[in-house]
Amino acid sequence: MSPLPDQLKPQPPAPAELEIFNARLSSHELSQQSLTTADNRHYRLFIATPRLNAPPDGANFLYMLDGNAVFDTLTPEHLSRAPGLFIVGIGYETPLRFDRAARSLDYTPADDGALPRADPQYPERMIGGAAAFLDRLAGEIVPRVEADAATMSRTRTLWGHSLAGMCTLYSLLRGGNGFQRHVAVSPSLWWDNEFLLRMEEALPRAPLATDTLVMLGDSERRSSPQAPHWNGPAPHTLEMIRRLERRGGSKVTSQVFAGAGHAATLAASLEASLHYASRA
Image 1 (spheres, rainbow, N blue to C red):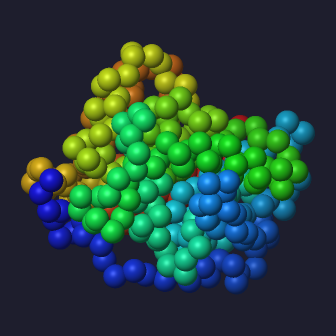
Image 2: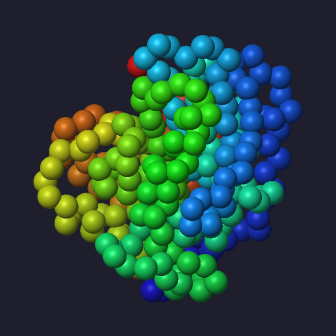
């Protein structure tokens, strides 16, 4: 692989201020908890529990990857517009917005049966653990959260941005992993020679099992290592949207944010994502 362009190289790590935990909220109660999985992976869960009583048929849950960054971005106004939604940020034990090494392993897929390996671009990091992470999420993290919530799930939505957005679409292509909706924001589909597009092409022409919302900016200027920068929305993502629409079986919705770069789409997506996950 060729070296990544400058705007894809890591920037200095930013702390997560998590100011929302100091706010007075009328809609939700906030909490944090640590979780160590059976295979000794460590996570920090950021949970917004509705003050409203859950409906008799259960509540909607929104599980958001990169939980540190998400809860560093959420505002009281966001939460007030989704008063009945359980929001769960799945993050890491770090004071920073992102744990680059942990997310690099958890959010990147690999061929079936392949073990995690060193990242060719950043050899100090491992990649290829997304299948194990999604199994961990469905088998340990979700059951613990929903047992503590003392209500059953009516609808589960999985959300991710950038590498986490790619992981979200990987969950979709694997059959859903127990989620009924997926939200992918600026998914890094250029990654590993367009791994996810190649995976989609190789899958049987079966309908999708879950609804999907894909959001991206029109000024991201992201690039694969093999191609020059582009102007406008990422072509890899537009191609994936077209392919998902052709599969049918469930509803695929997309939205392009005018003037938004790659980092800006995380915040830009939140209001629409909360509304999407809250729907009955």
